[in-house]
Length: 588
Image (cartoon, rainbow, N blue to C red; front, side, top):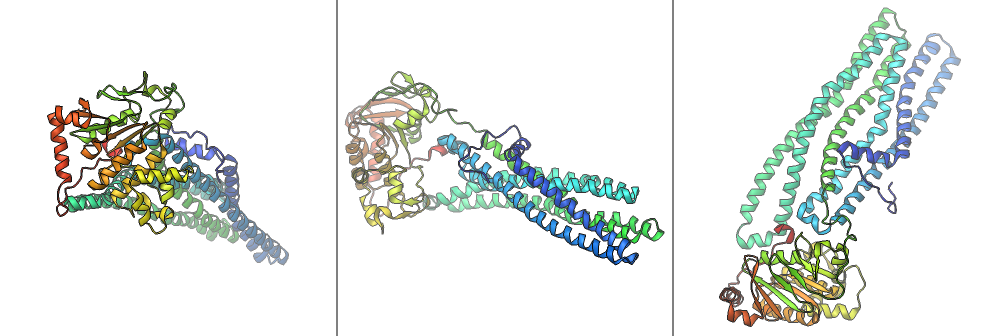
């Protein structure tokens, strides 16, 4: 199997068959071993019918005990040899398939890592998961052709030669019979590719909708849209089921032919051989051998059909994988580019007119939260723009330097399964005092205390055993602990109550004192803490200053903040739904 320490190399993505060929040549010695063992096994299956014919003609018919015992011993030896070949063939081909699976999984994982933040905007996570598990297994099954599939071709030719020594007519029946079978199954294989592709695409979309439905169930229930969304899902599910029936219809015909056609082929070879035996053209032993050859040839014929079936499905799966590998990161080489400015410096976004002074707490407030979020995406170099860091365009700076010094924290950031300590601390060991400070600043102490094992308590995937507000505070604590030179936070307090929000805003300002911090928000509790507030209208800066200066000078800003204050002052018996920023990938 693939050595985890070894590089997978560069896959050939010119086409599905080229990718499959790359998997083959990547383990050429093992594939060659499987082909030799598969061919030897298949040829070994053809030997017993010949030995049986010798036992009958030379031993039983002639009454020669020595010949009978000799040929019987040879039959036993061939049986043992063939059993060993079958075991070794199966072991080697299993390794071939597993190598292909792990090699493709590593290719998918490495490419997903290279894509980074670009990936969620280009492809749903459920689609990536389907490719990384289902499709790679389907592609790997195609490599079975290299073992017993190649052996089936060799066995087919060997049987034709053996039959030619008995009867040219029987050899012609075998040589023409297999191509006729291929012509019968070929159109079905072509149709299977079409319906399988449609089914796979629709299945990926439906899976994505299901994930969205599960993740947003609580929100949908609060808005009263759960039944509407569920009905849309049921409608698309019925359409997918109909498409699945079409796939099943074609598949059932192929599998039925895989069982039925070899039997018809056996009859087509045996019938003329039986007539020849009656006429005395061939001996009884030769009749037995012909029947044995034809019966054993059922296995190669089945492999032909099954191999074509696997190849058809494997091409569909490989096409989807290649489509994923065709996605390109924003920078092919994250280390390529100019050096970032030394020390803290100004961040500028010419598209909006926002300027972020170093070491200051800046807030972006706008009528439409998505416009402010786009600004921080440009400042974080997550989308191509004219943003500048000092005098250098951000898009010209080496991406790894940008990621080391600028951190974008949004409400879609993943909380992986693990302990609470790992969720906050990340992959690096953090000093205990820094961890405690970040938790206090994010007002997350009550979360730690409320867990049975404190920081060592286990979080479910995506932190599902926490409330929305708790997850938001854990994400903020993680961002504060990272202590980046520039922190860009999207609506960091949108899912908490006013009391908690005020504490979070004060903690954020205190913890980030002297560091560059940008938040998108319309909450007056957060805006009050900012050194500078940029008021955005239609994505452009309409005014800037402190919170109180804008309240006095900008009527639109005053109305915006007044609405937020009205929402926060609602009684607990009739809470207003807070405006929560959509995930970045959803905006894109």
